[in-house]
Length: 113
Image (cartoon, rainbow, N blue to C red; front, side, top):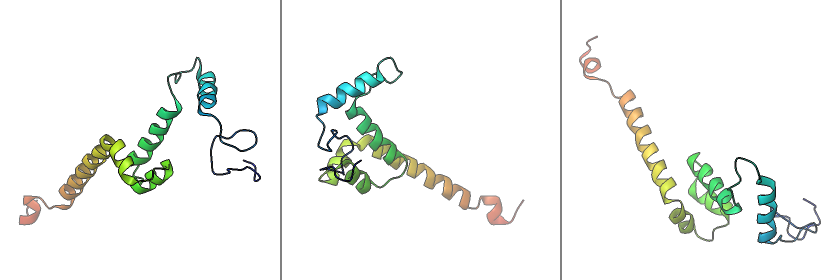
């Protein structure tokens, strides 16, 4: 990105650093993906994939929400409920495993074996 761009914070820019038209981006992506295994992808699907991967890898919901540019964390939470539910299940399973490993069994408590 050029330092003299009008909007250096955006990812996809025109040659002058302005916002690039969404239809132009979608056309470029379709052209790039044509004949490849991921031909069905859209920018919107890539955005969801990005958020899902971040959440599934333990990135805090607030951070992901800010990353996506959501005004309110509730937008992110509502959109990614299934991902968050999956994370809750993984957390519960992990805690169960930790507690099982840390809890002495009956023989250890009695000093047998």
